[in-house]
Image (tube, rainbow, N blue to C red; front, side, top):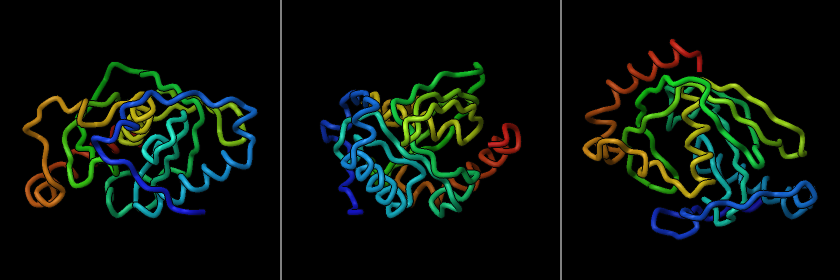
Length: 191
């Protein structure tokens, strides 16, 4: 399982709308091997998720996993979830602001508004139907990854560019207050 190179902001692949994957293609050794590479690359980079176009493959697949992630200690754990042709729809009008970062936008964070609850449908890596209700910070993670599949990066959703900060300055000036807010979100929505 080789690690894949992660595309960074400015690379055209991040702005492409990813194409759907057919069931026949999903079952091929090449695509299953790619999914293994995607997961390994996400884990190696300590990401909470990774979309295929972030590793130069503009297809509608992504992986999400949060397991005691040192980059995001305030995020609840979430088991490895591979999504194929996912669709996300809000299940509430309620939103919250969350500082986000991205493996494709190294050393930058900013506040993004996300829906507090979403329904995610699609397939798993075996082609079985997936239908998830996701809330809280975890819902934000799913929205972030599915944005990638539509050619969007979190900086497109930053409402106030004055919240953009380097990782070091986030830790120095904003993290303590944000972690308090994040814990309140987790307490309220359970995710």
